[in-house]
Amino acid sequence: MKLNRAKQTLSSGQVAVGHMLMEFATHGVAQMLSTADLDFVLIDMEHSPFTSQDVARLVAWFQATEIAPFVRVPMTQYHFIARCMDAGALGVMVPNVKTGSQAHEIVSFVKYAPLGDRGVALGGALTGYQAVSPAEFLAESNRNTTIICQIESEEGLENLEAIASTPGVDCLWVGHFDLTNSMGIPGQFQSQRFLDALAQVVESCRRHGLAAGIQPGSPEQAQQWMGMGYNMISYSADHALYRAAVVQGAAAVREIAAR
View (cartoon, rainbow, N blue to C red):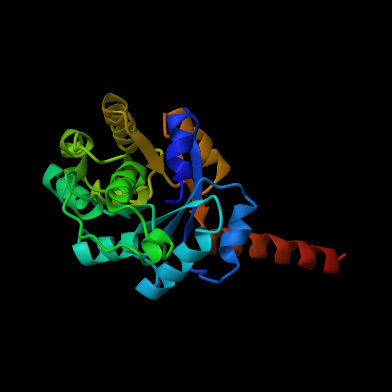
């Protein structure tokens, strides 16, 4: 089974750095991101047009790199989670986790018995189309895969301890836009209420030995949130970086042309 570089990086006490794909599913994107020396990539299915087939292709391309491919599924449903995992994803991000019982359900969909209740289908993309020892592979999968629960609501904040204490959960990830929206302060990332919520998530993660994840849109945001204790960082999304680079580059060309 492909090693989970994000887990390795976190276990060594370092910050795991990744990136989110929401727009580009071309065959070259895995190699391009590999040049950035990323630990993980988040393939989004919640807010993107990516289909299961798109995800399967992307995961296959990332298998040829050291980057750990994770998939953000649209919701807590077995058919989304199990199909992504069977395509070879090394973990899932689940949006808007609100309760401990929901976290338990997610674990049951990702992990094999005795930790969960995921169905077993070996010999396909999951195992690189190779025959494997079932007992050894299932145990390694349970150890090697990552479960990320997004905290995106006031209800999720109220149930942090129940979510964080669920065996099998690896990371609590703040969905900053949705959380501020739930709090009635959409996009107010310097609000003291939001900053207190960020600190609350970090404290819960530390108590339970979990990673604290978030997706900054700028180096300044990354510095602030990492300074608060966030150690699993997805730096922006593909379309945002592309747009920013094109806007900056085109403006520079126009400025040169106007001289």
